[in-house]
Image (cartoon, rainbow, N blue to C red):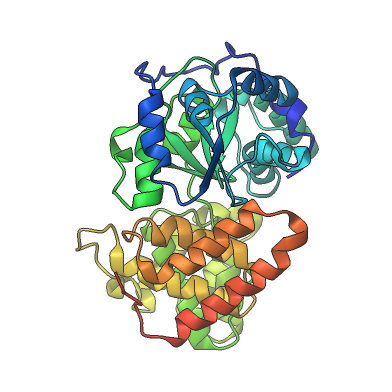
Length: 393
């Protein structure tokens, strides 16, 4: 993330996006904040004074929400790079964390076709789209880092915001409010986020209304045999089952690969032969290919208390394979496992080492990420070598 996010993200405490939904006004008390910090697996330093909090807000151009401010005034968690060090941290690192949410949105504007309807018609030129997006995002209330890639909206005086987990425009609820989040993240207690709702118009759209919210798995087409090409078709079908975005051009590309490897299905040449102007037909043809290959009838059912449990375990194994064979970046594949596997599958202990590595990668500076990425690959290899699914608790 670039250091330019400071100026881009600076907003006045009263500047809300259209559609702002005011959160609960019930504040976090000092006593409750102390209890929450007792649950953390972190060292707790002296809390930030009112003057320190004011100075931080002035220096970086944002506002802490009231609950966040109370939490940091009780004690400052440290000892792990996942916790922002507001007192002694590298200013560029803090600016990078602050710019992460907006830079992620801009990445998806540039590379994945994201566009917020309230910005008006999307320009034909990507450079113009990025210029408009940067200008509009400068008016959106700041998301302020809480822990790793978990964020709270930065609106002065407001309490009760949900905690959001942020990766580009893949943004999900991770806690009904700060208290609920801490118990969810650090004790394993199920969150009440099914009852919550985003409190800022733009981020509400991303979390609840954006059709691109579940981002696609970024990977190269790895298939070298007909069996691998059919597996690729099946995995994209599974991703669609759980609501992840699979773009039309991906469906056409996987069709081209399967056709080149002599996979036989009557609709496959039609899917592979679509021109860019015909991509709107890709989903229908993809479904026909699945039926012709007998894949549609063999997809797992959603028949357990955990949503799409067997599907998610299949996808976790696939994402691990993509990591190991180099078809996807370790952090990208690991991020998919964190978002769509570990949390939804009731935080299986077997995946915890991988999740910790992904969180470490996101919290560390770029110069140290290569070593963590290599460790993610090693952990993926270890998981694939064991029994599947690796249920251990």
